Image 1 (cartoon, each protein chain N blue to C red):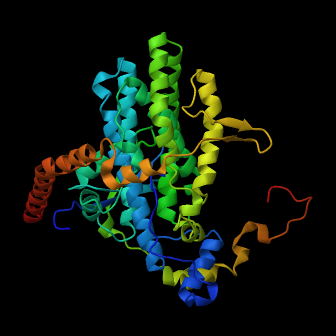
Image 2: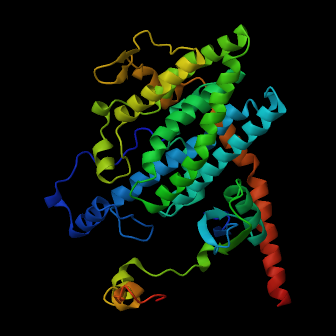
Image 3: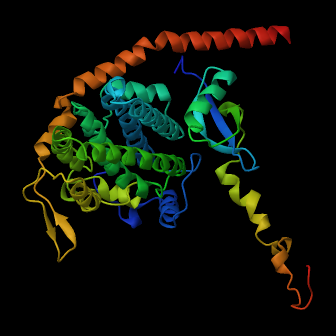
Length: 94
Length: 330
C-alpha cells in the first residue's frame, strides 16, 4: 500500500567467526532504522555481533525454474570431491 | 494453534487423478518432505490457506500482548516485571517473524493489519479472556504458552519453508515463556493460603479455554484433511489436545492444585487422561466476537494503529528528505 515502509532483509553474524547469515526480514523507513529494528527483532538473546540490512528490492534471486539448468551440471562431476579418489591404506597424509 | 479453524476453501480432497500435472508435481514435493519456497509454484488454495493460517497466528501473537501487558505496571517485583516485559517483547517479535513469513506469499503488511481490523481474520479465542489477578500471568505462561508449544513444535516441520523457519525461532523462545509461567505458579502455590487459592482460581478460569485453543473436535474439522495433505497441519486437534492434557495434569499435581473437571481420571489401559466434555458453544460464541474482551482487544489494536499513523508517516518523510538530500549532494 501507499505508505508502507520498505522491506529489508536482515543478516546477522554470530560470535563464532561465521559469515553473516540471513535471519528474516522487517519493515523500516530507512537503513538506520532497519538496523535498529533488526537489533530488537533478531538479537534479543545474543544471537550476533554484527547486522547487515539490505533492501529486499535490491536482492536478485535465481528463478526456481532455472534450478536444473544451474545446478544439475554439478551432479555428474563427483571427481570434484576428494572421496572420489580411493587411497591406499598404507599411504598417509593424503 | 494460535490458528483455529483455518478455511482451506476446499470442501473435499481431490483424487490424485483429478490433479493437474503442476498440482501433482507440487504434491509429490510435499510428500517427499521437500520444502516449498516463496518463488516456487504452488496451488492458489495452498497460498490462500497459508496466508490465512500464518496471519491468524501472527495476529494472535500481537493481540496476545494485551492481556499480559495489563500486568506489567503491577508485577509484584522488579524481577517479575523485567521478565514479563521480556516475554511481551518476545510476543511482538513472534508476530513480526510471522507477518514476514506471510508477506513472502505476496500479501502486504498493511493488508494483513487491515484484515484484522476489519474482522475478516480472527486471532486465537484465548486472548478474549481477561487477566483478573497476577496468578493469571502464571496460568497464561504455563497453560496458554504450553498449549501453543504443543502445536508449534510439529509446525517446525511444515511444508512451507519461511513458515517452518519462523516456527523454529519461535519455539526456541516459547520454552522460556512456559517456564516463567510455571515459576509464577510455583511461587504462589508455595506461598500463603490466599496465594495458593489465587493460583487455583486462575487454573479454574484458564483450563477450559486452554483446551479450546486446539480447535473443534476432529469429527467437526472440515478443513483438516486438506491441510494435513499439504503438511501445514501435522497433528489433529484431538491428538494435540490429548497430549496437552497428559503432560499438564501431572504438573498441576506437583503444584498441589487441581483441574476444574470432576470427570478427569487416569485411564491406565490406554495410558491417557480422560477428561470431561468441552463447552463448544462457548468457544463458537467467543470466536463470533462475544467473549468477555473481544471488543476491548480490537478497539485497543485499532487505536494503536491509528494513533501511530503520524509516526509512520513522519519516519517515512524523514527518510525521503534525507534520500533526496543525498542525491542532490552527489
